[in-house]
Image (cartoon, rainbow, N blue to C red; front, side):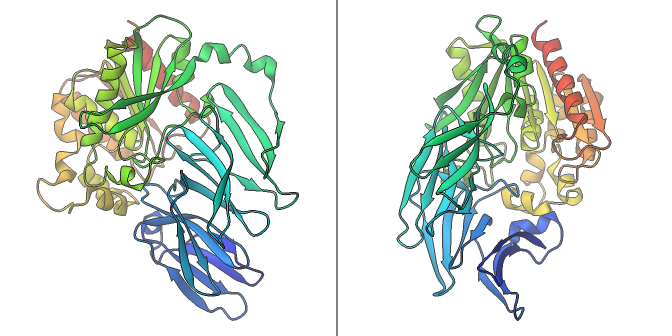
Length: 455
C-alpha cells in the first residue's frame, strides 16, 4: 500500500509504503525509491517509528520521522537522503517539530512546524544543514491539523494560510526575506458581528504535580462573569495538539462562548509539537499520567478564579472521546460529558478496529494478557462508578473506533442508572466531520453542555 509519493528527478519516484493492505499497515511503513525506466526498486529507510511529509528534489529526498498516532498528523525530526552517496542526514536542531516539507528555491527545502504555541516557517539547506526562520508567530498559525506551507517555486516566494481563533483564514504570499502580501476572501460584514460573541483565546501554562510543564489554550466567553462554567475539550491522537486555529475548526468552543461557557484546551504529556520525548510519555500509559495533567490544569483555572468547580464539563473526539469517558469513571467532578468517536473497551477495540497496531504500540502490552492495560484502562469496566450525565456520539461508518464502542458504553451506563443519550450518525465516519452531521453533532454537544452547566 502506497501512502505518499514524490518525484525524485524526472524518472524516479520516492514513496512511503507498507506491505500490509489497509490503514493498519501505515504504522509499519518504509521509504522506497523506484526507477520508471527499469522498475528497479530500492528500500531506502526503515524507521523506528513512523514517517511522513515526504518530498524530494533531483538530489535529495526529505521526510519527517516521528512517533505518531495518526496518519497525516506527523510532527518530528527532518531527515535527508542524498541518493548519489546514499548518506542519511538528520537535522535535529530546528527549534520546532517539523510538520511540513516542500522543495524551495536554490536547492533548499521549506519547512513549517510548531513548538508549544509558536509556529515557524523557514528553509533548510540540505548541503550544509543550515536552517533559518523566515516567519514566526505566537499569536497566529497556519492551517491544517498541523502547520503547512506551499512552495511557489518561482520568484523566491511561498504561500500559506494564516489564521487564529478570532482571525479568519487568509492567503499569505511571502518571499524569503519575509515581505508579505495578504489576500482575504471573506465577508467582513458577516463575520464582524459574530467574532466578538465568540470570546477570546490565550495560552495557558501550568505544572503537573510531578513538575512537568504543560501548555494549553483557554477560550474565555465575552458574556457572563468569572468563574465561568468550563468545558474541558480533549484532543485526539493522543499525539496531536490543540492550536490557535480559526474558531470554526473547533466544534463547540465559539458556540459555548456565546452562552457564557469557557473552553479549556490542554496539551498534556503525549501531545505533539513539544518534541519526541514529550510525545512518548503517553506510550504504555494512556489514561495514566496524562489524566493528572488534565485535572491539574482544571485545578489551576479554578485557583485563578477562571473556572467554576461546580460547573465542569468534558468532551473530546477519538482519544479525546476515550478520555472523556474515562474521566467520568474516575472522578465525580464533571456535571456533563460528551465523548465523540470514543474507545470504551480496548480489548474489543483491538479486534474490531481497522488499526489494531495503534493500540498495540500505545498500550505496549499483549491484549490477550489478563488484567493488562487493555482491561484496566477501559472505561466500560468502571461504568458503574460513573454518575455524570453522558452524551455519546459516533459514526456508523467509523472503522477506526467502531460505533459498537459507543453502544457498549451507553448500555453499561444505562444499566448502572447513569443518564446516557446515544446518537449514531449512519453515514458519518471517524470524528463526525462530514456535513450535515457535523452541524447536528455540534448542536447536540452544545445543547447538552448548556443544559447541565447553566442550570
